Length: 377
Ligand SMILES: Cc1ncc(COP(=O)(O)O)c(C=O)c1O
Image (cartoon, rainbow, N blue to C red; front, side):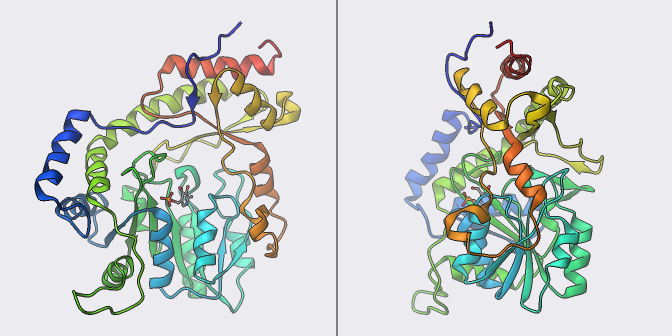
């Protein structure tokens, strides 16, 4: 009989730098009394990210949602945008806030990212952009999407909320497409408590984004456009800058956890995993999704999700329901059947993964899952 965990094991647990290190950073803020408005720590953090992403075209925000919302506005995206229903709801909300019509198309079954063929079939004279998501940090079909965008003169925008630290062919994932948004929310592998970042190709956008996130202020007396308030503050910047120092270690620990999960679950009938990424991809191991086949496993994804709670394991059904099934988006007609997306939304469970998760806990979670299949638990 496997014992339940004494304390709840959640799907994630934010990394925090050593308290003393953070306290020393706070000292600087206490001395400067600069808490926001492009303070010195934000400027330093921005430079660190420019080095990390090997570009000067970096702009920081107080969260990823506002970053993407401002990106669409600044780039002048309008009309229709082709996007995925298999994502966090903010990907679609930012379209709504810009009065853009989302056109939902299906995803591919291996990594759950937009299916390029379906994208191409959904293009109309009103399409202005593709908004694709590197779901779970899995890179989208970068070459195929870039080719479609080029041939149809569309902007290619990536919601890279899950993909901090991912590299393809040695290049940071933010280098692909016209623009990428990263979320630094506390639930993410890399975080600044809350926060967001845009990385973009066209350097001219930087000034525009800076105006838009700061009420449109050019200087004390000039407001050049109706901007909003989406600035990252000094405490967020401090946290981000400190967590960045630990990023490689965090990714390494998650890689070990992922390896163990894969090794334990790969052969379990009814549990399906994404294929291991190709050798040119450096993963960030942000999430641990498994697909549950009810027939083979002998229990539905939802039943497994509920059962795990009895052992104090709180997995998540990312992403369920599909965004197009939320009441606010139900009236939008979808393009095609969304067969793969519906199947993913019904079958995927993301298991706990974070740097401080012990390997013995991963073993225990796998023991629970395997014994549930055999009806022993
Ligand atoms: C895919 C995706 N897009 C957008 C967001 C929104 O980012 P934020 O929470 O930083 O606003 C999130 C996560 O929160 C996300 O997972």
